[in-house]
Image 1 (cartoon, rainbow, N blue to C red):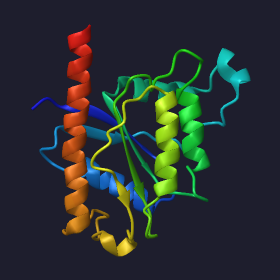
Image 2 (image 1 turned 90 degrees about the vertical axis):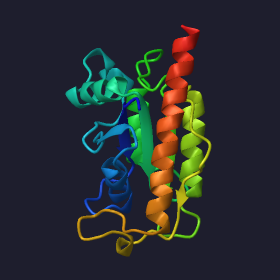
Image 3 (image 1 turned 60 degrees about the vertical axis):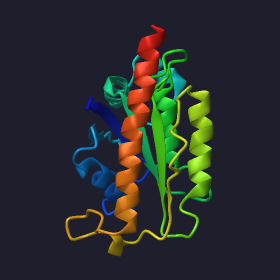
Length: 191
């Protein structure tokens, strides 16, 4: 099985974030063919095109980490029926300078996590719209609107407890490996 390096971008900064716990649980899955790491976005200065002549070091590091990945997995909460500002800022930073987006053509998947019933549906679809503009092929199935996720969904180490939610997350991870693999192979065949 080909292994793929995956950058996980979590849209929540909170230490006990449900989204970060789901992201860490994805990273902990064995035999999924994914080498995952969370790319931190909390210290990214707000995007301002005037800074491009001498980009902040945090921008450069973020861009390098995304560029080095084979694929990007977004894990996000929903704030006010949309994407959290910190995640939108990271997307703006990575998509610039114009014509040099580090997201361009990178296979992606989106997981939205919420204690609510609709599982962050609004944020998930808003992020999908941004990915279309970024020219990122986004995995369509299985869709991942994880609702009713609470602190009780995790064990004392912060990993998902055995059960349907963990099974779904494992299915997502395996499907994402297949998606990244297919996109990379198709791109190589066209080269």
